[in-house]
Image (cartoon, rainbow, N blue to C red; front, top):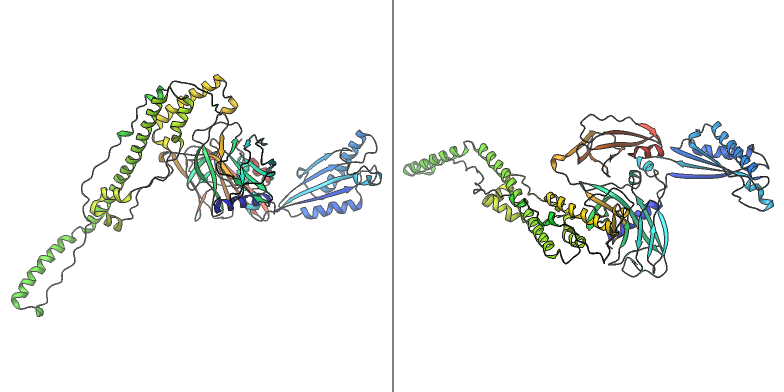
Length: 610
């Protein structure tokens, strides 16, 4: 495992296990005399001690559970335990604690600490527990939003394991899948697996996870954290091994792929792996045929792009050197006359050169930038030519094999590249620049801030959307056919299925690909650096953090006309405050935040779009 990823894996586990530094839990047993519910003076002092800890805290919650010993009838003891719990609650209310911060319960004789006669007094009790939070920063508050939800299981390394997680994720771990960081196989015996599911905006904020990578917006189908340990050492998956994850049923989106976590100055960003996410199970013995004519009869319009030819780029308008008049003392009369004549000729050329020189240079620079568009067209033509060639070769492969291979395998195997990124394509800058600028290339680079167009993270399907719709039509027919034949069910059709060859944070994600005309920017003034902002999309499963530009907050290149909620959180005097605005992403109205004191449950409500 690369050192960077190994560090990230270790860091995240440490973070998830040590994150309660601003939380304190205090527990006391308030004891009662036999058959009594009145609070003794000693118990009042114990309750006052807890109150002293609570006073001045940012936030707290109190749990009260009443108990009795086993003497007396069951119903009588249940009522007695209730009266004891109410007595403790009343004492806290008298001290000024709000009733809404107290949860109360009573168990009668159900839970005994001891059945020994001489220790019965320990059972006549109220269990009083206070969870206290102190927020010195916004991060302190955010880290307490959700309780530790790491699911811990122990497996035998030699056995295949299938396990269902609390939120509906199914995990399949093959036998003998793990090794140590140096490649040594894990020992036979027990392995500790730690898994965390992240599907809600609350979970995302709590784990500092966002659906963005660099400047690109993503949409998620869920995030999963997986860690394996043996004898306190972190394990990784062996080469060739992978863990299968089936996400909970949900509304599926096209273009999902496996993303893995990468670190950028302490933040977690997502790196695309190019590995597809499917939504169905296959059977090896399945052979089906559907109507492939939407694909086989497809006509492309990609070859309609034409390249504009250009004339030779004129040279940069240079300034001639200003001539100096000859000095008579250096010449004989005859030679001075010749020198004077040459000077006047040079002076005329210089004067003509200077006429409109700045305008000529400005026009030349405009021509440079105009030709930059032609340069971009050359690049676009090269990309689309590659796509067209690849697409038609794929269609021909389908045509030649439609009677030999089951159509579900033929289509998936042939057109899997349509969901992949083209990525960063090597750009022969010298070739294309020379083609457009000729011998004036060096002057173009010298006198302008010319930058050559690069293409990153282009999705294949975005260049041929017409074909992608035909492909979706065939894939729908395949899914319907499988369902009719009993090979898949509706539950499988609504679950993302992926295989991850790495551990740590992984993400079922897709890029939000939009033309420039469908993008907008949401910006507003912000002079308080201690406020955290979150942009929640209501119809796209996406949560963004902004860029901070001097005194501005900016969410850039987001989809137009989407229903969003902007949530802001800050802390002041150890208290948390929050504000939210439901709005349209294209709105240009001035934003006004109405901050109100909040607690953990309050911020959870704001982060929910339901």
